Length: 310
Image (cartoon, rainbow, N blue to C red):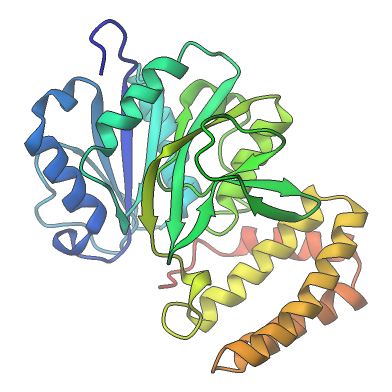
């Protein structure tokens, strides 16, 4: 990293229930800072704890915030952006508790940041994230569908880009300018929401394609990682995002995709409940109006706090 210009970063680790000693992300960061103490010049770490009970002894050397109400990813990152602004930290690096960071990740992403920081249109820097070997992020949005960008192509991502939260660097002033994360999407589709808002504001996403993260995603393994309750919430968030931010044509395409998903899930996964839930969502799209679904989703978000779902 260059000593001439080093914009400063708040690293945000969102914890839920997993013991710190078992958090792959926390252990990776600890190793990185131990190997290179100079990283402290650029990075400040915040552990945001959404667990019901606080840690008896929070790790030393970082900021600890406990949120027993569990305001989700959205609440954690919004509070983090406000904290970063108060402390004159220009960027936030978002991490969940199970992202495996390569040894040189902080140094490499810092080098990219030094080169990109002075490009005012760039609001996000995203690495290449792989989940169970699949290129999970970033993706290009194409009519309610998304496809991985070509491997190895660094630079400004063409079209509308979306990326998963974990591993992404976001410019604080741009996050705040678009109103931050939405309480309508406290967990699932929170990343889709913020990247869509940045796109609508004319901001760009920089692909740091040479930097790779490996990440575990529940949607890649329904038999072993996905819970029924989590999938139910995911379906509703997907439906709400489509209804709120996609065109009628894209909504029709989503209905077709759900029909195809029912058949695929019936054939691929052992537990038939997932295909039944998808079928239920499909029937709701066919026999209820968009306005009714939106009102129902907003009412649910007002009535409940963030659910504690593994």
